[in-house]
Length: 146
Image (cartoon, rainbow, N blue to C red; front, side, top):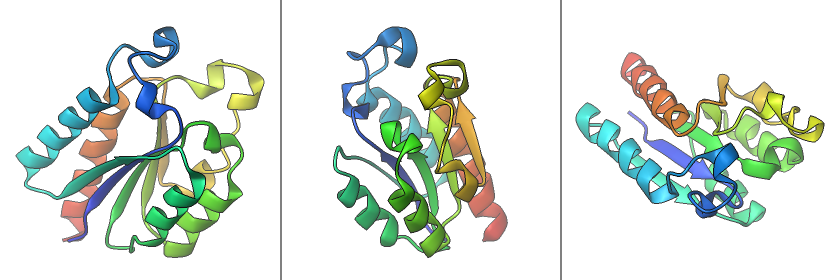
């Protein structure tokens, strides 16, 4: 069975400080603790990472295999990064896109995701619980494939 990877893009490291009215008050460390707890309960391997550098994220994605599972909050790259989209598509890793805020209810430029078409699904607007829902789905998906 592959590993579940949780990758976060730019400015996600500022959670808890940055615009709590949109992103909530939980820090990334607190969100990651919840993810690790779910993985521990399911006895499944997970690793959480964050970067503010697009090329680093692309390198991480290119290291994945179809046996892995990706939970991705691409942040602002959601709307612009065809390179991230192509990396996910290229390695054929199953993926779920996660957003803390509802990208469809905010500024018009945030409503379009170039990443979503290469993902199994998208969770948007449910705050930090979106990561928990994505983890539960990823765990079930991986167990079904085992």
